[in-house]
Image (tube, rainbow, N blue to C red; front, side, top):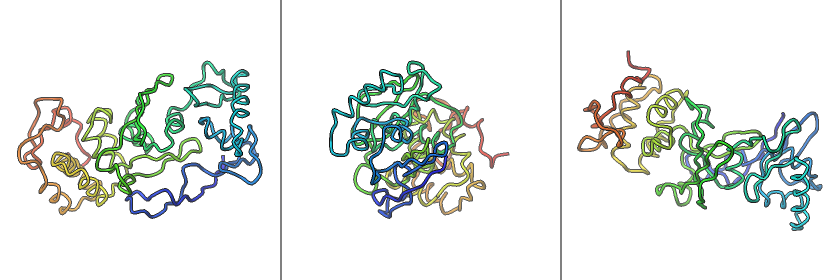
Amino acid sequence: MQATLHSNPALLDRRGTGAPVFGARYLTSCVVMGDYFPYSDAERKVTTAEFFATHPVFSLEEAVQALAPEGARSTVVERLKHHLEVGRLQLVTREIYAVVPPSSRAAAFKPDPYLVASAVRADGIYSYHSALELLGAAHSTWNQLTLYTDHRRRPLRVKGATLRFLEHPSPFRVGPARALGTRQAERQGRLLSTTGPERTLVEGFHRPGLAGGLEELLLSVGGVPVLDLDLLCEVLKRYDVRKLWAATGWFLERHEKTFHVPGAILGRCEKRRPRSPHYLDRNSRGGTLSSRWNVVVPEELRRVGGPDES
């Protein structure tokens, strides 16, 4: 499949500076089996087949905007009902539809849960373990998806996966800060917003249960090719939590050679460590005190080891 990108000034760069980035939420066009289909609005009217080809999962609102720009909502609803009846579509949840591939049966088809979540909340930013998976860094797969959104709702079950819609963390709730440490990841022709490895690491230390646990977090982020250390410090400054500075410093020290961590960065983290020992995992007891960072490390995490350890 060939695709064309379209720049959207509404998107911010990962530092949240307000500068536009190259890449919109959706790819603008694709070539499927030799046929060209637009992703965004075109001058001519989009057909139902073209819309289905470029929107494997979509909301009723998206369908109305693309297929009836003048607002004939009832006509679109009837058209979708027909495709539901003949098995071309699957109703995932209220007003969210998935296109069923020709070789599949609607009842057995499992739509991509990431595309479902984005159709439910188009403003969503994937986080925690979902971010690790979209970044291609996750050490294992998980059946729970998390994304930040302006409009929380109850969790949604989608054929084996649970989608959780979370509030933006308070340090990232207002203005350009919301985009700090985020980037775009492609998924079946869609560009999805996700936290990058720097923000995911900090937020994973903050809420490890949503990242699949600390061991999963360490193995996953430890395997990424590069970390933006200045960006990492910006995220830590936003949270302004001493334990997070210490946990991140402990992690960076273990990967000092891999990520080319200068001593100044480690010193910055050490200066902001907690004054008294804190458990790296607040739900566990026991372990070994890392005196430089004032964190108590569970034994199983010490066994995980970093690439810089012999």
